[in-house]
Length: 237
Image 1 (cartoon, helix red, strand yellow):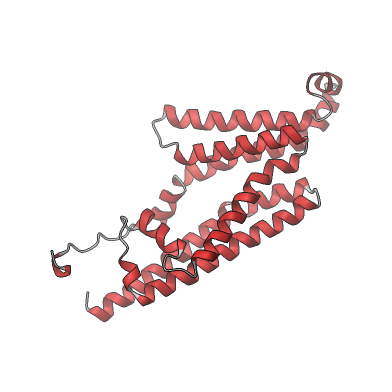
Image 2 (cartoon, rainbow, N blue to C red; image 1 turned 180 degrees about the vertical axis):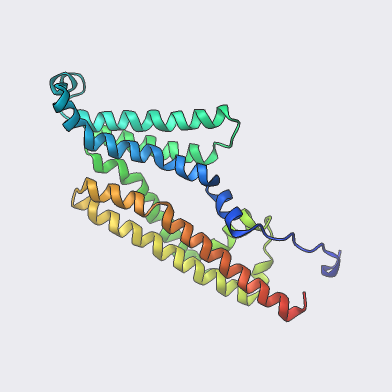
């Protein structure tokens, strides 16, 4: 079949539809943050609440001096499991939930083992470091990572963009932007981790979680649509 006989690519979904799909829906994005919020709240509130209720001695006897951290770990795991089971019972996809559950479980294990709340955030820091490094390295290859991810997630596996110098350049600078943002996020978290600032880690985990991701997704979709529209005008397509 010649290139002229190939069917035209299906119209791309809207930006909001693609963002929703990548995050497992807006509901999925919200659910993914619930275990982290639960950990933050319980870790911060357990000691004052236990003191107010007169439970400090009992909790210390049961869980040790780090009872607030251990309670936070147990609650975070329970919440993550609850979210996954709820999605299963509603016959909704659990792919994003399982990914989050693995991260929560690993962070919980590290925090429980070390007795340091900051270690709950360590898997996310290491993941961000690796992700940012891979993105930046790939930007200088013939397969910039954002272009490959776009092909898989939003373009039906097509790699036509690799034959377009303009699209290749677009995906390269987008990959650099993604990598730089990821490493910036990691850098801020590393500073708080080394300073043993649980509050700083908690705030950055929430603020630097989905908001930058949403902005980067929107930027990527806008840039790709802009280049495609320009190329369609130039080719008369």
